[in-house]
Image (cartoon, rainbow, N blue to C red; front, top):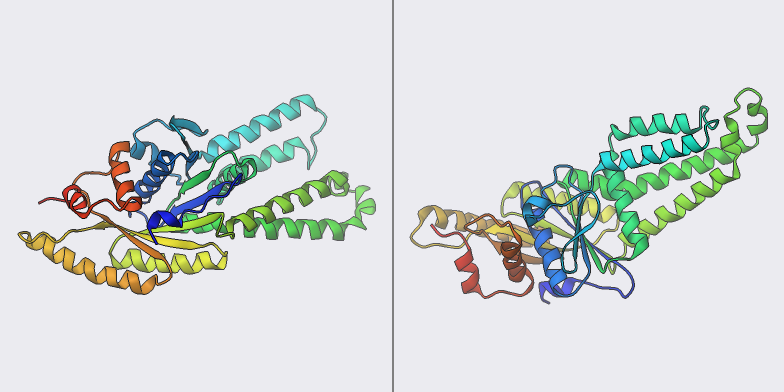
Length: 336
């Protein structure tokens, strides 16, 4: 089965591809190359950078902002900015406060505004903004495929666990509201803000949020809609971290269908250093086969130049997805 055959597309439904791995293994290059190749095949594609230290614009050599913009035919790109997302929410609240100047109080607009101020600097703000983007593209089905260029492993695992965390949190809020329901009337006499707890709209909002989270969990765990491609380099630290990530992703029922081994050195006979590195990498490639028996494994050579810019990224894509001729690969690989 060819590597490109692992793509699954659904009529009128967006396909999601997450590209992840240890920091520095070439995730952005692989995700950018993948998005360019998909756009070349006629798929309306969005590539999303979830890494707080964005490098997507540097890789594609085009300006990319915090809103999706078309950078070439069929290809759109966005770098998520949590600060910008929080600023938008603050602006919306300020507009609501201006329209309803008397709606303050402990659980009113002033309270929510203060909570947003704290949330913008709190742990998980990046993941919350990333998850909101996922929800937006999931509900719109505007794109044929969305490629997520993810942050290093730890951040990505927190992002993909976010629906579980939110589901638990909303579920507990709903239980708390039910338990407080009987005592609400008595509490109103001493705590007027309990009106918010008793408000039917609150129950509807929580129920709607729970339904959206359940939908997101279903999409993330559906192998026909969502897959994860792990990028590694033939070194032990990258391999072992990716093995642990694979186990963690399994807990959230996220399908890892393939492993991309980046920076594989050719065996250059008249270069002792190259020959030694090649020999060591062959051992690590055998270890990768052992650690990832259920995933398709594809190799990408170590290029002589930086893989940046759309022309070079497409060459990488053609090696991955079009089985570029080995002679061509060697020519593009490192030459010493």
